[in-house]
Structure formats: structure tokens, C-alpha cells
Length: 124
Image (cartoon, rainbow, N blue to C red; front, top):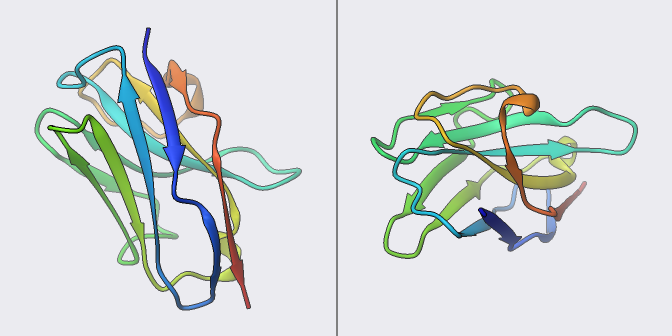
């Protein structure tokens, strides 16, 4: 059973940076895609970024491209989302998700495993 645990959320001023982490257990992720989604109250969960663990290929939502960077540490089975130039509209609960496929997709229904989320708040 795959377990995902997010950490690193918090409060930051607009223009600042924050890094959130997703620690995985229960599997080796060499054949998995790991992604970040985010959600604000009353809105659907939206795709942020994903990485195909095996070859390191990445994909980003247009809204974060050039500001966010997704990466992974194979030795720690941990994935990171480095967020720079943060904006108030980046405020959300950030969720880590995994699917057992090398192909990156952006839809929530295609991810089988989810963490419980970490709050990121960007003040103006």
C-alpha cells in the first residue's frame, strides 16, 4: 500500500518562496508518476505539476510554469515542489498524488493514492 505524507506548508509573503515535500512509502516509485494538486474552498482540485519518477520528465500547469519546480530524491523516496515568486492566488491546500504509470496525466481520477494535504498561504 502506497502512503504519501506532505510537509513544508506554511505562511509566506507574496514574492517569497516555499518548498513542500512528499515522502512516499510502501513502494519504490520507479514506475510511478507523482504529482501535486491544489484546492481552495468551493473549487475543484487542480493540477499543479507532475514528475515521472523513472526518467524525471516533468509537466507543469501554465499558472505555475517558470515559478515552480518539481523534483525527486530517489534515495529518500521523496518528491519536492519548490515554489518561487508566490502569489496570493497560490494559496491552497497542496496534495501529493501517485499513479502506477510512467505517463503524466493531469486529471485527479487517474491518481490512485493521495496524501492528506498541506496548507500553503500567501499573504499580499
